[in-house]
Length: 123
Image 1 (cartoon, rainbow, N blue to C red):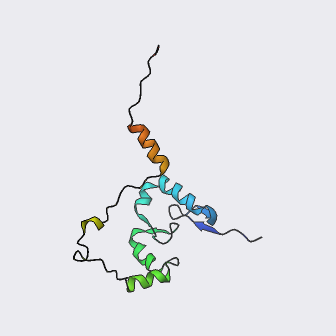
Image 2: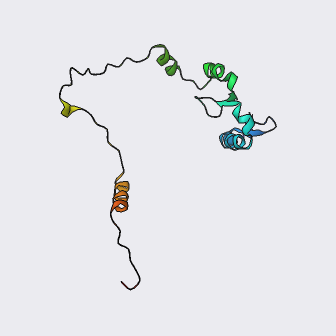
Image 3: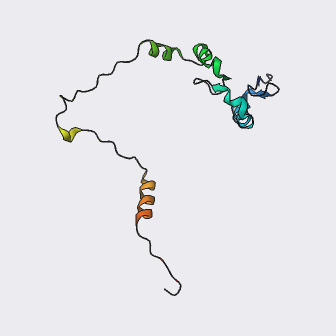
C-alpha cells in the first residue's frame, strides 16, 4: 500500500491535509481565515492552487494544469466571421432567444400564476 500524499494548507501552514481532502479543507479554511483569504487568489486552472494575489499571474503562467491547447488558443485566436446585416434583410429570420424551462418548471409556474380558490370553513 502506497503512503498517502499530504499538502500544506496555504491559509495555515500548520495544517497538513491529505490530497483527497484538500479541496474541502481549502473551502473550510478560507471561511475560517477571512483576513488571510483576502490576500490569496485561486488559480483558474486548478481550484486547489491557492497563492498570494501578487504571485497569481506568475503561477498561472507556469501552472502544471494549464493545457497546451489553451496556450495555442491565446497565440492564435480563432477567427469567426459573423453574417453581415446586408445578407440578412428578412426580419422573419432574425433569431430571438427565449427563456429555457424544463417541462416540470413550466407546469409549476402555470400553477403559481393561475388564480387559486380560497376555501373557508363551511364551504
